Length: 445
Image 1 (tube, one colour):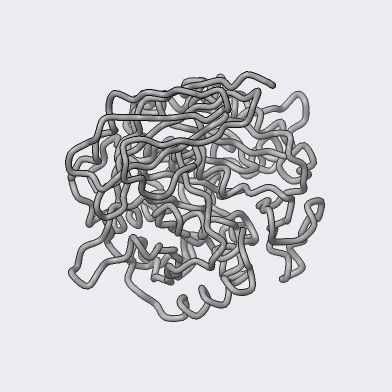
Image 2 (cartoon, rainbow, N blue to C red):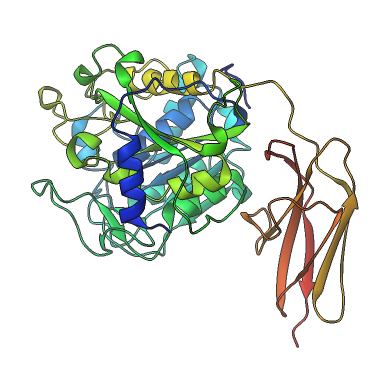
């Protein structure tokens, strides 16, 4: 890949995925749209996600961080990692101005991509005030750090959903206030909080999205050898094996071709690697059903415990336990993950996405029916209509997957403001660029 800018029925889904994940497979080269590569992570995976985003902002267009802090917070120091980057005292909070300065120095020396790339990216942050492992003050600092580089309309900070330190879902896991223990092998740090974290962060990252269907996913969860991307991975805090979820529409067809898709990297937290909890995170963190519906390949790299490095909980390297360049484009783990991204995107085509429909119109009748119209685009199979209650999204599909006509009508509830966008749909089902936003208000009755 060129380096330029570019829910659930757990038992059934788990059974299907586990059957498909038994045999090792090569990580495939797929047709990934270069501008639709995003990343997320929880806890140590959240720290690694923002490290990857900052180091490779020429690749990633969005990042989502759950219970994590700002870039280079630990400054290559385990003592700082355990204190100011997890449970800071009021007089020892992460210093955003200092971390911004360090980031700019890394930029000047070429250790990370130019920070100018970050301005138009989308960033989604989640933190619970009930989290006793990574205090909310740490995520407050992360939000302030990103605000130094990202335009405000492209940032969202979710801080009002409760729950202990975990990956919150809307259907799977322990009670929301449960805190797992490292001594209990059954604790996977996924909690049912009635909140679909994976769905929310994917929707914000990609701006427009389709809600999952109720049927079980039809794609494949594969297991691959991470040694292909870093020699002796278990000596560097990486597991021998990683995982990837490949939606049916993204898989390589018999003719050797693959439809255009997106790529998302999902990073587990400490004590959540497959070496410790099996496939629980990759099957139940909430990503795969959204991925299947929206043609998102999900890459699940895996960390592992390395006691000799002081990494007994299988965390990602965000404090320098493996090498001093852990937060840059030259770190062992960052380059390994990027090599995986390069492999998955190796079959990407240079075909430009379909242009959005033009000459959009929007009207409303006395009964509250919204009528959208547009000029037909040559060479497209149809259109998809998305709606949001907020300017700049995220937008959710409200039409059929493919609208054949150049118009669409929908009833909007009274006393609401809504925003619409229309996308062209290509013959293989992939969507093109979004149209301009159309806003309309429905008066109250």
